[in-house]
Length: 235
Ligand SMILES: O=C1O[C@H](COP(=O)(O)O)[C@@H](O)[C@H](O)[C@H]1O
Image (tube, rainbow, N blue to C red; front, side, top):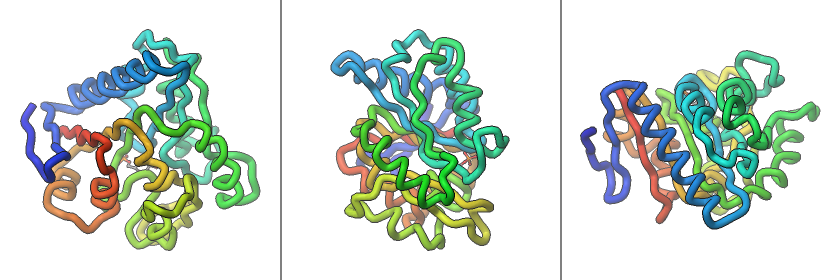
């Protein structure tokens, strides 16, 4: 593993391949959940969606943590039912809430509410009950978005406002992204945690992290304060 520094606190940890990166992320998450459970009866984990975290969840699901004491919520959700292949909830149910981790409690963001805004309002209280999170796992798009906080989206300013007080917000579909309406945890919510792990791959994403400072992900870096941020990268 080599390291490059993009700020005094944030290091890009480079791993040889996606398997090694997934292993590193799973160990970090499991260690911080175990640390939280050594001090508290309950722990909470924010699980990201998308294409990157599946192997991390596969590994976590093999680890003998006291998962029945762990609540899992999502960093964001697409406005699709949990039966949809696009559902982040479906990803987490299929790949994380199985095996050793089957007993973890899922706190979903999607509900059969009439609109994403209604679902976000309903999720606000259930997410608030989980704060502070023990660990947050995020991905990042090729456009520098995290969760469902997309560049240029009408919801972005509010979603990145560290003083908004909001935990869960709706984000409308947009051009070029997101392709469907979304529900997202806010920067305000996602920084109320003891550790942030960001799992990315490929040169495009690494260069965004290391060479830009104007995208949503960089607002997260700035807002993290004393919260450790680990950027785990593989080619
Ligand atoms: O749309 C989304 O994108 C991000 C990044 O996904 P990835 O496939 O590039 O890792 C993801 O973190 C988020 O949960 C998802 O809804």
